[in-house]
Length: 412
Image (cartoon, rainbow, N blue to C red; front, side):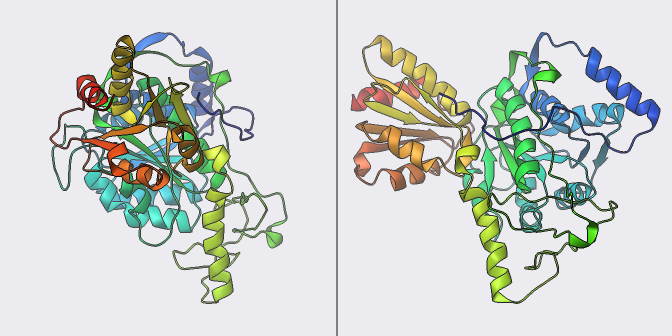
């Protein structure tokens, strides 16, 4: 079952950049007249329209395969809605631009692939330490370096968590379909705004470029979360205020609130500090905003797990192959189920421990040389290495249902 969002959201609405009355009128017309019908949509296209429906009004990016369609669509659509699109000189400038735009009050997003994602890591760390909402979409391809730009891989899973230096807890979402690309883009924007952090949407090249029949929801049914705005007088405002849920108001530049932004360790007002107590409080806040809200953040799908003797743990496009393999195995009387994380970080530790407790064998297929399997072995220490089996591929080809079915039959 999918774990539903439990966070409280504001009334759905689209946030606009500074726009003329004529532009605002045009935006309202687009919102009320856009027909929601079943269409054939590409994954990257779904990301772009998910961003728009979540209220994203600023995009800065550098074109890179296989994510370029996200930028192309937003380049055409954002100006119609009073938003801003900027093609930057590189990915370092892109992450800096969306962070700056967010500090000025925009909902901001960029899209890239592996090489660009590597360049963004310091900027992602800056967004996290300054607690600035933004979203980075990484449509993965085979690497390292330039690799195979048009071929699928899942090699950035660990980088999405550990890529930025220092301790910087991550929120990373991972869809397995075109419609889910739309839904999780909205969720990524919502979580970024709510928890004041940089959220990453991991995609597979195949998901980004495949086309599926999709019916997007009416805009009235799209849940949009906007950042909490301060209600105190400007002289009382603390840019990094402490509270029990680690959710703090965020003023924007130009609203009359005085605050400082720096990548150095800082105090509650944002000014640099070398005091160990204040540095410790800052680091704890970054950690606890994730660890104290696990139930809100984690989503995991359980498929045919009720009486499964063998479990498959897979994400993204590989999970789709796993579902097909499970259907074939069931025709032969083999009890197999699937666990699929929609939230890859923070890792769904409790759910995985509970759901894998009673199975005998766990198979972990992934398009890398072993990243998810280490997390599964960490959580299933009662099982031997021969009970946690890998299927790994890094040659630009997908893991097929038959590949997984063969492994199932080997252990059944």
